[in-house]
Length: 394
Image (cartoon, rainbow, N blue to C red; front, side, top):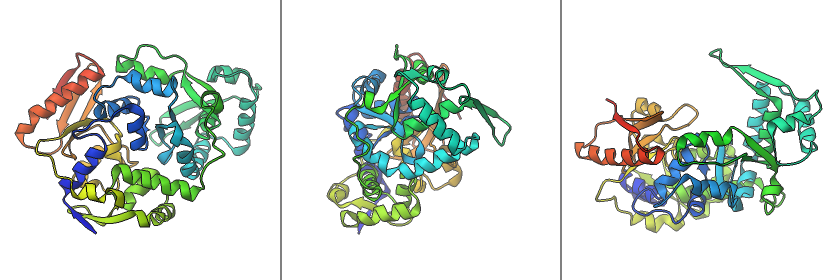
């Protein structure tokens, strides 16, 4: 068993996440090392990449996604959209199939679609004609009896509407039968343009854009889930078994099976202030034990749902013990707000709306850190939109 301080553990993970001194060599390698990037909300993957690369523009990520197609976006861990390397997609897809099927079945029920309607739409869509095509064109060429508008009402009374065709297209993309791509990529120098990329999508069979992908040649569910747990630990360990469960979306039995399969490859770590035992890959044990906290503050301005913050949602007391403060950052579903992080500890939050970027502290900090945080906030603000007004809130 290894004993460590919170500062040592935090700096070790920051270093592996390219949030300390060293920066990543390129977009695709660092995305693979972090397993993937959350694809939503729309600025998140771009800001996460900007924090980890010495030189980055939004076009760098878009080119890998939609021109070189070395990256792919799909519904994966926790049934949320992720951007992952194409070469790892099949195994990640296999590891997360069960939760994806369950969550889409639940979503169809919420919108009032039964299995027979979904299956009829699947068959009609796949036999419907030329590709790529937008949802409107696909709907227009289906038998008139199939497409329909659907709606649901939230507990607060808000009514949401979509079409059964749009829902089934999302499902076909999640299953790896189809793929989606923006209809047109224009100027993305301003972040306001990024949200327009998903307003009109083109759909095509997965093989049309990713001919090298073969989803029939995949490991078993158990093998794929063990590999995913190992990849998670490589990027974010030391971590708790509950962290693995939450981040991957695995149930308790699936997590226990995956962790058990890695028993020979892991060791236990006890970090002061973090309840329970944490898991670390034995291959990283020496590097972890020789890690020393930085002599200068390490400040990161991270986007919503950044991999660093979401990776330890279950053991979030490592960020701060006050549960009220935890709720400022983490929702009940685990989504994370944009965070100001100093030496691996969350000290504040920030938000961008229109022409303003606002930020505020959640805890008291050394006043000497304020100008350093301001510099980093201004740097991120300039990346989002030059000329943003930066406002510190009390």
